[in-house]
Length: 491
Image 1 (cartoon, one colour):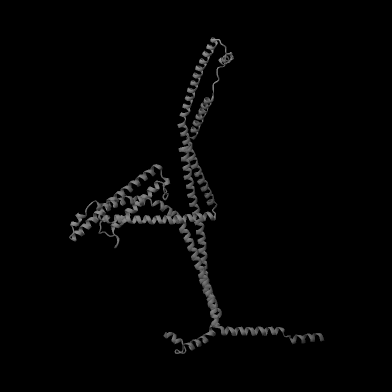
Image 2: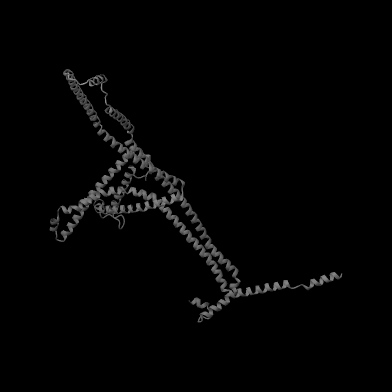
């Protein structure tokens, strides 16, 4: 404040002093108008131009990142669709080999049986003709006129009785033959039922093949759209990746919750194994680190198990042989079982430690008799629950590999999109700041001119006066030129 007072002409009168200083500085500011304008513009450009260059670089980086994200997105989407098509073809192949491989043999058998049944039906439909030799004799006898001769009547009666016997015998034989044929046809009913069931199953399998074929067609069409690299396919893949990312993230959060429960389950008994008083840092116990290592090791074995079972493809296990893959699978499963057994033992130890601690506190509180009074099978329920959790949580953590793979694959696209938006937003901020700096320079130039408005007004008035005088001089005639021309004419 004393320094400002020293600059004032009248320290006790601020406003007149400032006005007087401004009047004194106006001529100097007017004289330095050109250099000051150049300085202000240069300072404005020195701020705005780097910001514009930075914004342009960020926009180019965002475009490169977008192109890279599109390439990764199309490659990942194409790979997933190809895997889906391969699985559908494998399912169709299995269905054909399992259910439709014997269809030609079945068809041939059906045709043979149908032909045989048709022949039997034709045989049952045939009616044998009567013998032609004795039919004529019967017609001749039937034409004999009835007379009173008893011999003829007796012969006719005998012939009629014989014909009745023969007719009954023939009818009986035909009935037996038809009964046998119908019995044969009745024996084909179970076969027809079996054929009907087989054909129904074949129809169901063919319907399943049609559904699989429709899925394959849809996936092939989707693959064609991805290969075309259109915007619609890119938006669809980005939306699918975002959905997978958030769903996998939710599953991972649930898995972290299970891992935390598992950590709390084995952290206390681990202090009895590695020492409860050992500290790695000031607040980090060695037992907690050991429990965390066991959980991470269980997760690692779960990753290897899921990888060898071909549920995931995080590691390049496709280079190893099938025999080695099976060995690695059994080794991972065995280690996981051992770790689960260790957690069961630690759960029992934890319950023992807690019971001993409670008993000690009750003994110190002169309530030792209450311990024996409350002991029973009910108090063992928490122990059984801890044992079950200790055995199942490692296997539950093993399945984290599936959402982890989805989280990693979709996270590449989502994080790339977020980075692209961040770069574009930062480029917008830099461009806006550059425009603000440029407009600030213009404002400072105008403000500088406002401070020296009086000299500028005088300069403008003088300039206007000079322009008017020059214009009047151009319009006024020159006398010397007229005189010179008159003398030349006289000569």
